Length: 79
Image 1 (cartoon, rainbow, N blue to C red):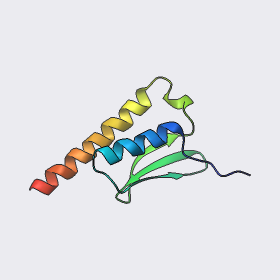
Image 2: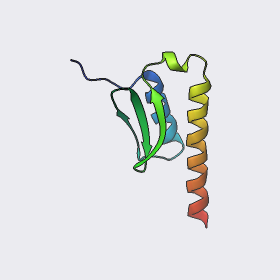
Image 3: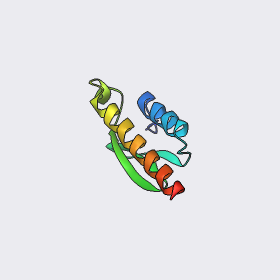
């Protein structure tokens, strides 16, 4: 049985995390879902494959979560 690999959308989310300065982001692949962890905390659960992103709503929500987290970290650094 082959090991599941991150989908194209997963890789794009990781690139986006890096652009926002979240270098501790990683995707762990489970049996049913991919999980996005940032700083060891579960941020988002993603479905396998790109088909789930067809309507773009899932990816837009994930991007919004990443932006919120990045903005929160930036605000904490300035306090």
